[in-house]
Amino acid sequence: MRADLVTVLRAEAVASGARIHTGERVESVEHGACQDADLVIGGDGIRSSIRRVVDPEVGAPTYAGVFTASGISTGRAGRTDSFNMIFGRRGAFIHLTAPDGLVWWSAQIAAPVAPDPRTIGLAEVQACFAAEPTATQILRRADRLDTVTLTEVLGPVRRQHDGRVVLIGDAAHPVGAGQGASMALEDAVLLAQLEAREAAIPEALANFVKVRAGRLGKLARTASSNRDAKIAGPVAARMRNFIMPLVFNRAYERATGWLYDFDPGTLPARLDVS
Image (cartoon, rainbow, N blue to C red):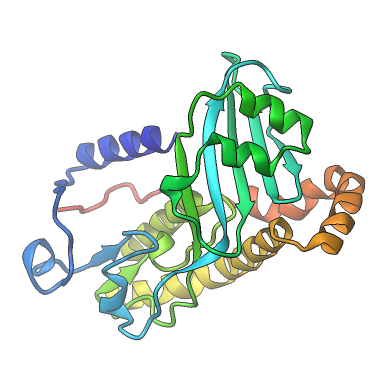
């Protein structure tokens, strides 16, 4: 899905007149392709090199105590119009049956010490969910892992712009909770609106950071709570497993309405991307 999203965005950028360069890591905005730009947007992820241009004192990302393993299995395992989440002793297991019958799954596993992703295989994931019949059934029908990634967190980025360079997406606020791409797209739309509306770029960037602060802060707190639930200790996990079936279906839609009902608006009619 991420590859499909990147393909669509890339095609739209080219159609709008953007020139795309690859294979070049930007370490400075005073040299190379950025040196003559009026506005530099750092959307280069949680390990951003542009971030240190804006905030030289910012710390490095750290391991969050959870790693994710994802893959595809055969055989239906639930409705095709919704995703399913299982809370196990070692973490959460999410699965979705696609219309073609394949099951997309992702396991979020608690581990106090960061493992080497290269050492994680299906056997290790199966062992983590051995007490969960549905997860075990799905994992037995998987022939490989597609990805294993470590979840990382980043302390607050105190400066998100310097009047010419601005950070968006995970470069500025790696929120987690499966919302990284969504927040980056919202950032892009709102930044374009403000840049088109304001007379000067520094004012546009200052307003952009101010406008986004509340929503992104709330999501960061939500993501932290979600992560804590997946790495809960034995007592907290038992309480969670007792409470979740009682309240989840009743409260989920109301509790997440602020996230999914948000409308950032549309892009300006014309963007100068030269």
